[in-house]
Length: 592
Image 1 (cartoon, rainbow, N blue to C red):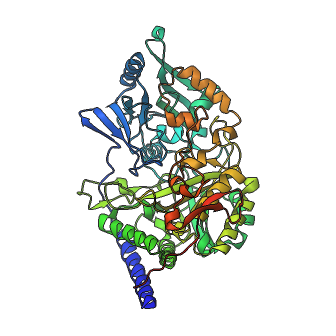
Image 2: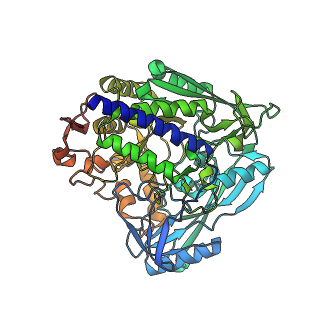
Image 3: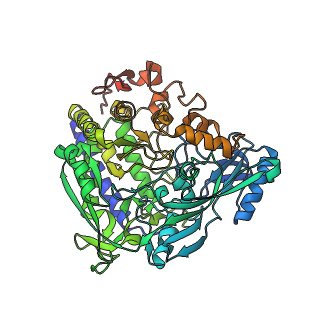
């Protein structure tokens, strides 16, 4: 009977995934994401969240009021007034994609300053190849307007629903080891920032920083603690074309190939599916603008999905977790990766059909996507897959940059874990595997400290914070191995609390950043408990309580930090013995 149930269950999962992915490919419009700020009385008594509807500690961030300046003059007046009143302030972006609590003011009576209406392109100088925009301009609008002028921003994140102010503040990047590297902030040549001032300054200071100003190195990646970025000037390049081909290989030599591949191809990245022992190499280079092709990249996971489909997928995964159905996850993962590969991940040769590799097109049509944002209100019939208003994806993200000198060893450690637990990372493959992007050393004080590979891992998160995941210990060990054994730097806009433990000490110019912070905002009006913790100015980054390790709020030191009543106990790692992870020591049996 149990065998029959298992076969039916796996068949059901397979059919469900086929149905879901079929719908995923067809949907073309959806309900746009809502404003992350909600106020109960006009623009007063507010809460703010991120686009996923939950911070790592699941707390609710409150603010006394929210304001929406539409000009720099209005922004200056707002900061001056709040400074005069001694109010805590935080900047909120249009879609609020940062997972950590960067947007939370220091007090419940604080002020949220939204850049939603600071969304204008101010100037494009085609001769100097520069572009000046307000900080609320989205990446999509930036690259589109640049293209109209025959210009391009060479390296960007792949999701276009970020604002320029937000992606700079968190150090967001694309993928390359070439030139200045893939971080957008390394192409900033000018930046205007509005900060608190003294009475003699009218309680506000407006600083217009340019190349050569040392303080620009602090402002380019600031976590929002220096003030509000008003305007940004970027150095662009002449519009160019790219040629993209995806090549799938066995991952047995991934550790040996990864650096060579990144040095050979300008826009290279790798998507790694550890449980399937394969890696997908993105062969991606510039080609002459005379080369034929009008390709488009509409990445499938960034397209709109029906709410029904999202609910079915989430229900399936919830059931797999509760039934310990690792086999079901592995089947679903293979189905997903096969479908994405067959569909060229959303690439088309002419904006409509995929007819084969290479896909050649202009930079602005290939560098980023996110069509689930292109939408009319449709009563949530469709949505972005992570929209918290519908039953859809709910996940953790562990994203960190491992130095090139350690990448091979880290990859081999992960592969050795998979040998011990072959099904452990099927759940990661369900979220399209581990995205590996190339990054380089930056002049920004809080930018990358050296050439590295950024590993972006997305995985299931339960709605119940006290419910462990399947193979909880393996993902915890990978996270701790990267951060503590190999000294990886966490992505400022992603990650769970544990990834930020001791992170600030890894930045050689960290104290210079704090010096600028003290100068720009001596009373800490743009700082909060979270930013003080992550910058090493205050303790409490680790939250020790029952089940804290399950959510990445702590590294377990006692069994109660895991879920002993459900069979998960605090134990050393399997490969990295210094890790402390929540390991399952007994198995539930589900009998029908």
